[in-house]
Length: 128
Image (spheres, rainbow, N blue to C red):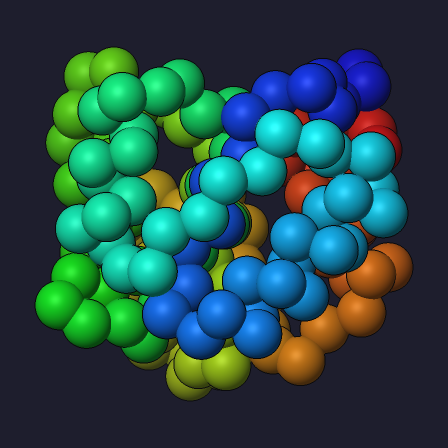
């Protein structure tokens, strides 16, 4: 199945440079409707206003972490099935397990290449 590249994508990261990098990679892959939020609280506000086909979130953010955001997304009826990819430098096994238990669809370890992002997203949203 081919991915719908016109879907709304939400990038959540507290580092603007990382948001620019991920947005650029998504644009290279053909995704054009990309929004961003600086933390989990801002992301939840956007998720209540708009329907997203994919969320890419950093783990380490304040005041609401990526893991807390994931749990909130999964708890809401409207967003519980939204594909969610954790993008983080946290490669600890216990973090991966915690994210899996919370319902993450995939996990991308920073730093990563366009090819790695494409592979991870393909497994979540379909052929890119």
